[in-house]
Length: 76
Image (cartoon, rainbow, N blue to C red; front, side, top):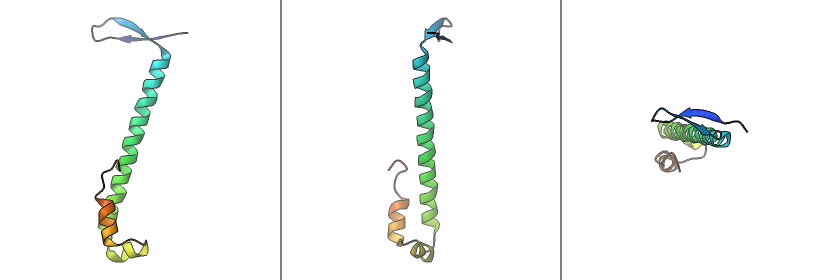
C-alpha cells in the first residue's frame, strides 16, 4: 500500500497512511457541510423575523412562532 509524505513541524518527512488522510478529508468535508447548514438555518430564521404579520399568516405562523424560531441557535 502506498503512503503519502508529509512534512512535520520539525521539517522532517514522515509517512501517513492513506486511510488517515481520507478520514481527515471526510471529517473536514463534514465540518464544512455542517457549518453551511447552520448558516442557511440562520439566514432563513432571520427572514422569518423580517416578515410582516400578514406574510406570517399566509404560511400559517404567528408572530410569536416566528420570534421563537428566529431566536433559536443555528445548531438547534
